[in-house]
Image (cartoon, rainbow, N blue to C red):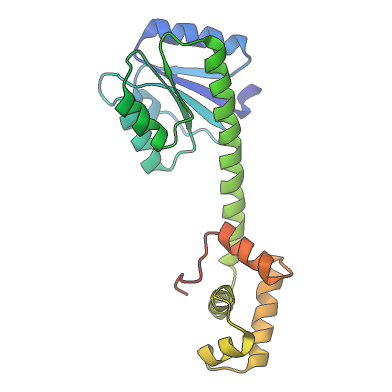
Length: 208
């Protein structure tokens, strides 16, 4: 698996960290250990899929606080929570915010490994979608202001003559702009154009 994907354990219990280091090493995972949420936040960002095995209750910033901090930071970490306490509200909050799993200590090693596998699969998918959106948005940003206006009206379902009326120009001019939009974005149909724009995060109501 190498360093293309990573498992990070954040737990203030040194014995837990030691045990999980051995477990993940035996399973073939690259793993790093952190004694606190603050230590993890100080780590340099990792560019590949990453699974965070995170204790809920820790001194200082707790697991749920770290989950919120990573959400604000826009991180792509996929989180598997571990805890020694049966805390239904915390579990509900963690899962609602996108945690992959919530395991009670002492947990089954195979169950944890399976949760980590699911987290890394989700992490790869998240990174793929982010890359596709970034590429699509980059092409959108290369449109001229007028081409973007035409795109917006096409997404609203307007015909060329209606767009021409909205922009106070000739219909043939709109056809030219529309053709350039399709060419620049690499699409051949309105359906493809709609899907491409959705992938780029562009809505018909977005301001030109």
